Image (cartoon, rainbow, N blue to C red; front, side, top):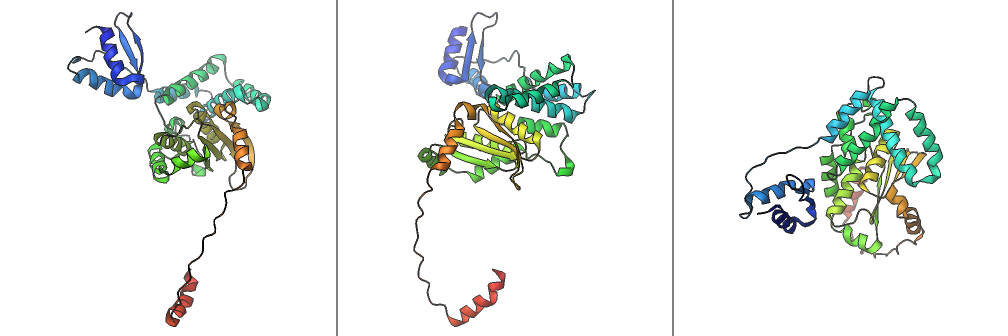
Length: 315
């Protein structure tokens, strides 16, 4: 069987999971999506017409491990926390300034202030970190930066800071959401979520993943507002939701006092006009209130009434 014929069979079986095919290479190869590689390999082995029985090469990159190594390599002059914090801030500013011009000058000044702390060689490492993060998130829904943060052991123990593992967030999202939300999305056009203490964004990401599993387009039918008192946490959430393409408004502020220090809009929020969509939703009249007749209460025996009065202290 020729490479072209092999590619054709894989393409017929897996469709869009097959990304490209290089027939002219010395060893022709097919590029498939990471989440399909196991099934593709099983198909190549078990299909009678193919019967592949030799794995000649297998390689991969642990991007989170590479990010950890890069951050620690840069920490000979600055603390690990400072490197992580500056990476998050510079990446968030770079994304924000591409779409949110109303805050561009102030944030560009903040960006340049951070850059001045580093040599040219050190500055060049930060785009590499962002590229590695992007590659990591392309593998699928996950809280990559929250995992990295805890791996670096830079959480603030004095604030009781501990990021929820993503598997727990997935479990909570599945428990808290159901298929009854899908008709609501279809009726209203989109649904909103409020996360008052977002951390690295793990719960917001898990909710987006669960909505996608339910068949909801998270890029057009879900909007998230996330708040955190810690500026690094707020920007971490902003960075991840931006790269996942989730419409969101991330607020560095206090959910209890309602103080707001800065607001960050993900690119898809700006480009798809979510500010106006949310404003129209707020201006819509509230749904009609349906009065439900209360059932007529049956007479209560005297003894039972006295018991009710006696136990009222425990209501």
